[in-house]
Length: 333
Image 1 (tube, rainbow, N blue to C red):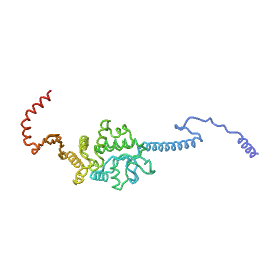
Image 2: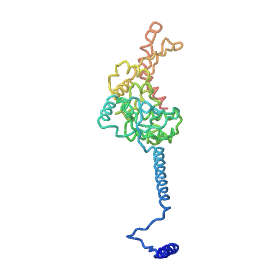
Image 3: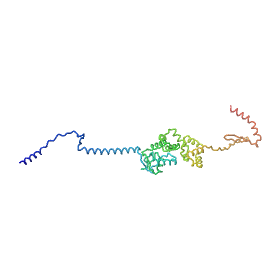
């Protein structure tokens, strides 16, 4: 009986829920419990945030590449020269010096290129031809900024960089202006590329029309020769055949001279005055008088025929003073 009562008591107590103390919602030691379903949402948010950040970085990289703000390394074999030449030649001594600098210190300043407009996978130089040549000589990749450029933007960048570095001589800049004009670029673009005004550009183009390209090529860049001397040579060539000067320059073994010395030699040849040849005298027979009249640009001569009229020359000579006085009197009248 005692066991039965015990079992009933246990069963009875199991059916009744025991009283639960009221929950204390205050945080313990500052810890605020999170809901069970918050953890997965937070993880997804963090993952999406990382993806977004990576996409933004990629987009930023693309924007920088589009603006040409990223320096990349390119095989020089893939890079072509600008479509407009701005140099007559690359000085071999200066090139060797640049090669040694890059060999010792690396290429400090990148070149500027654009994707080649006609050849996919290739590039075209805006500026940096000497650095490109040095990299080729060293067998190194060239550090370059790649930028999408129009033809106008390329030639302006090319000209302004060369002007800033004072790498080009006066005649090279003049030839650059001529080539741009021949390709149909406007005067505004040419002036912007060279950093000159309208008057200076006009003088450059005058020089290129007075001095033939063949003679300029034979002389070379002439880095020490400025506008005034080139204009002087052009003026000299107005009275001397340029082919004659070019032939004399070639026959004079001037190839061993520096470019500046070749210019001075050409100017000296152009400045020589051709020997004056005596023009044949114009002869005239005075009708009815035994005298022949000869006249040149600077003198006049009477030739008397003493066989036909002996003593007539003496007669005229004695009356020259009277004749001259009569001439002066008529002239004053």
